[in-house]
Amino acid sequence: MDLAAARGQPVHAVAAGTVTHVGVIAGRPTVTVTHPGGLRSTYEPVDAAVRPGDAVRAGQVLGTLVVAGSHCSPTACLHLGALRGREYLDPMTLLGPVRVRLLPLWRAGP
Image 1 (cartoon, rainbow, N blue to C red):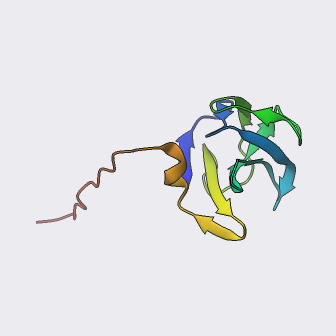
Image 2 (cartoon, one colour):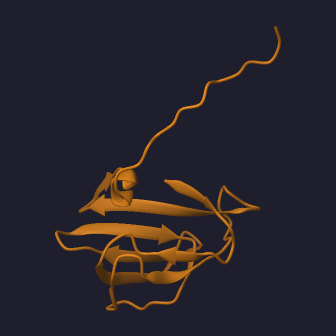
Image 3 (cartoon, rainbow, N blue to C red):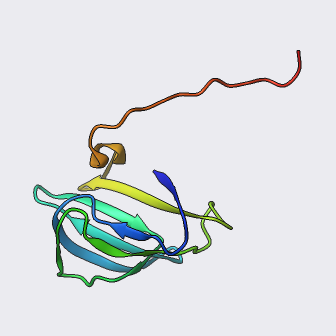
């Protein structure tokens, strides 16, 4: 899931856990936090302020958002992922209850 954001904004952990990865994947700097129960949250592109093995609490700053050759360029966006084992999950579940609002598709012309 891509979340609109600005370069340099702090990136916060969605829940408490342990940092299990800080590095570069596919040319983009990433951070992974493993939460109790084995769920992992992934964040990219992030200039990390944490190291593998660090315990983090919900809301703790993991680093800052950078622009790193993503499909959002030239602006920034945070890619948030959720995995359990090798299965990708809906990362919206990491954000708690949210209200989804669909806008109408407008067509040009009469």
